[in-house]
Length: 280
Picture 1 (cartoon, one colour):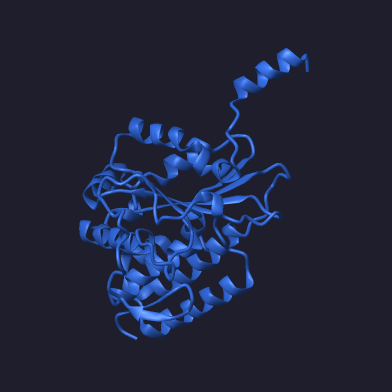
Picture 2 (cartoon, helix red, strand yellow):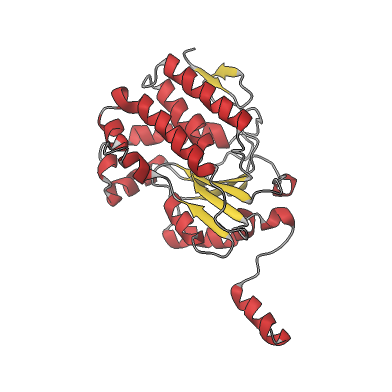
């Protein structure tokens, strides 16, 4: 079992990186792997689902806040408060304090909470987009895989969690239509993590962030469909906040699934002008 990763089809492979996408460049921004959004088949009974992925400190919360409150969009922040209070127990703090002792419990609860969030029914019948800060898939192919490779997760725990994940995938609709990958360098996010000063993150090392970066690269920056079949929009998260927000604006139609449907987002000001012309 050592040094093995379980693919989305249930097969096992060596933990070494799969063949990289030809687009795997440090400054790449765009859709990678080479999958077109127009080929995405979103079920008619649910909204377009988007997951925001990236390393710790890459800016996922900022992107979520940018789209929060927009018409027809429901956003779901990472359920950190759930992890901080399980009947009074702060699992996040316990995990960071003693990763060997608490990681398997934490991983089990993260899998449960992400499943709860990712299967949440829309609050409004007019909701067109559900946007999640990280996903169940992320936990399986990044955090869980890294923990196993580093020896923090016993092979037996790994197998049990993997069997649970495969059962969920086969029996529950956890599918995503788009992944937005905020691609950053470990050194940049390390500085951001230190600057924001979250108590549970005080012990995070640059080496740990480098390993998380590699896990994201192996999962998302490959054209090998054994590991990911979801279109990935890659944005440069090393930019300044203003430059990153500009990327959000330029890619709104992709992020919100409008490009998939061949339509464009209509700004509120445009709607008001049309109403005035039509005397509505």
